[in-house]
Length: 264
View (cartoon, rainbow, N blue to C red):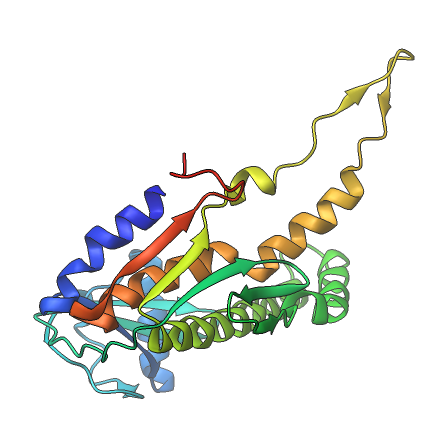
């Protein structure tokens, strides 16, 4: 609930011309990469003033920026560089009202079951890449610390993790945008995901050890819940409903999972 309230406060201005961040990939030359690397050693976050001496860097502008640019942040992700431009006075582009409402029931086997009967299958990005990720992590564990081979093995593990993250976010972006485009009101369960993914409490036995408490099965369930990205989906629905629906936005309705009304 606190996350949703924060998103509402941060994005409410967008419907009337507010703030927005645009993120693009940089395409620096070899010398510019070396200069950016030197700057990264000195500063964790790079701003436009810190880019002096690097020169004009090509940007893969996959969509036009809107509004007035105010700040720029450059960061390195693996061997790639990203730039985030924060703009203000972004003109609103409200969507037409549809008059439709939908309820979303998130799950593990299916990532979302809709009240109109549609079922969105869970692509299970982490599960599908688990074998390759395990081999890469095993290779990393066998490398000597401080060696170049360990550094390259670590980069491979990082690339696999970033690919899984990008696949999950791409899927959730498309799903949330389609729901916001087709519905005025979206109802989702107010789940306590942090509590749901906690490890079970140890159960001591009279012999001085611990009795089985289902920790292994719970660990697999926790991994599946986090892989589905329930919290990310709800956050994306919240800010997209406010940012793109504009005056037609009815909002995100959080319902009690136990059927109590009003939700606690």
